[in-house]
Length: 322
Ligand code: UDP
Ligand code: MG
Image (cartoon, rainbow, N blue to C red):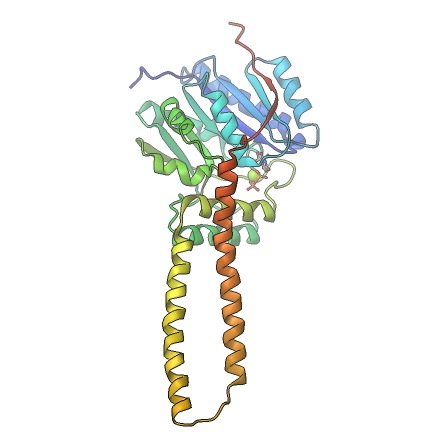
């Protein structure tokens, strides 16, 4: 399948990445040059940075890079919309010019040398190629723990996310066009893309230490991602509430019978503890269930408003000089 177009766009989300950005841009540019020389990608290939509302000099650095070299281009959000929105906008913009798009983090943790394998899979006819990390050695204990808990929970709740795959992936033009058809405001890419079908493959890569700066994924951002992922991919929590309600009802009926029998045979009122435990437990379960239902109602509310997923404040893209 050598007739496939070979314009590659690297989409790089950046949130307060001034420490690492210039170096990362250099490394990525060098990699593209090498791929171009080897004839694996077109010379029209580009690196597209998405500035996700950074408060530092990230956008200044991106603009300067774009001025110097037409192989760089940039999108600037009006505020911080989060990593998922950043890669989504980058992919959708890149789809206008590219034959394949690879999303990769700005911190060079995801081995850029794996690009050759991604492109090879694409040339062999894959429309989606997932990057899967070989190791978690560079992660701290807390990150490992939360990541494992996340994948376990997602699995239990009926949402098929690929283990150890974190948005380092290639999408072809066809896959990107399919992605554009999803009109939901709240797109959880990691869950959604595997449900699109298409011939796909995986590429394994080593995770390295962050080159500079620190992780931008705070605990709050990780929790939001987890809740968004679950509520946008699965309604199993709602089903679980129904099951829970059913079990509690069965238990209540048994308890009512036991109480009536007690009363009939004249056994005396004791059971302050039982009453308290039951009402506390029921209170907790009720509020919790209401909360879960509320999460879904909130999602529906946001979806019906259909507000823009992100606002682009500025964009730099230059036609190649060639
Ligand atoms: N990022 C972003 N918006 C955010 C948080 C992160 O665009 O709100 C970007 C960040 O600049 C980086 C990528 O997402 O390129 C992954 O973030 P990070 O490396 O901090 O996460 P980690 O590797 O620690 O999971
Ligand atoms: Mg990182």
